[in-house]
View 1 (tube, rainbow, N blue to C red):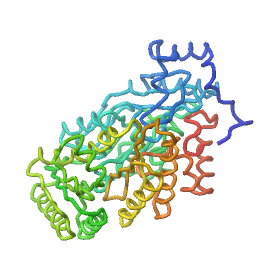
View 2 (view 1 turned 135 degrees about the horizontal axis):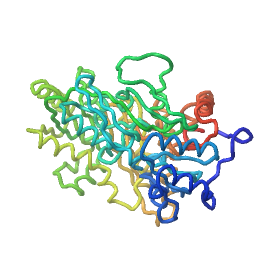
View 3 (view 1 turned 180 degrees about the vertical axis):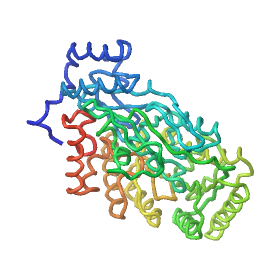
View 4 (view 1 turned 60 degrees about the horizontal axis):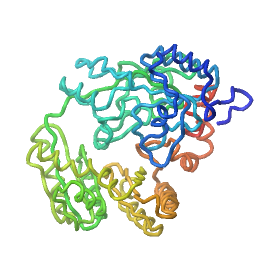
Length: 474
């Protein structure tokens, strides 16, 4: 969104911030929490997305909501871009400071403020890690259901900003299904609370939902109230091997059609199976065309019955082998095959481009076959894994940057993959977000009317255009 003529010109990506601005920032958060030297700010020029980099002019680490408010008021007044950041674990280049300015790091604000058993909720600060929240809930017999793969390092505010998914998404939903309320700071410095502690509240526009998934373009999240669930008594897992992914796809359709809603329903293609086996030596069937990981949670008898039904479906569809975990330790061992997919693939080449598309569940196998054909056509090495239960795939291309035009071939392949997903009624991202990485395809996904509305919403929240500029079509 252009702000020329109505707002201050954004500064940054130049010789650095003026000394008087740095002095004011140091007065707000303390000198030790403002970084401006090249070596100090360099780690914040990138996140977990490969091939994206932009140097900030300063890195500021507030410790309170009041400090965030003062920083944003200063930035709006002086036209300085601000890029909010948690752990930098996102895979969409959403925290790359493309316009320089300030990277606002919220990891100092990392306390679990409350876990309420009576209200089934928790209140945490922005920089609390997902695993810390989950552990605090579990200590009181409660479940925080969202479980992104980065849960040990990713922050709750980051999960909210990107609307993170996870392995339990089919049964339990994603981050937005558990956000009850937010404390946020608007780009002007105003502090606002949306939602609250209630599971039911329909007063006014649902700004909590709007801010969830807004990728740091509308406000800075400082505190989150999330809903919790009673902890299931047990959780167990099984896996099945198939000669062809299309057979695994038919098993998925049958499992759900017969009334089972698994807590886990994940798949790996053959290339991914072999990469995981090389990495973790789990005894996986290297000849299988696909591995389907299935699991459920709840009461022990219900879980045992559910797993057996899913195993029977896989056998009926023609699985070449089915294994059920015998205990919790065995279940965790099976889940390792899915959780280590990315590090296993990352060993194959220096650059790992992990992407994220979603198609309607019945088109899953067709989409994987399309991905394979595209990869072959562009001569790239691609493996695919993902969430079979909700049609969310993670095609992953690995390459050596010294290999001539390998990067160009990978980018051309992903361009085709994104368009293929949309052609099948799907989307360019199911859980990673848009950021800078998916921006070239956003207009094709949303259309001109939605894009124009996004820009008007952005202008209403951020009249100076300072907050994560350039992201989400702004």
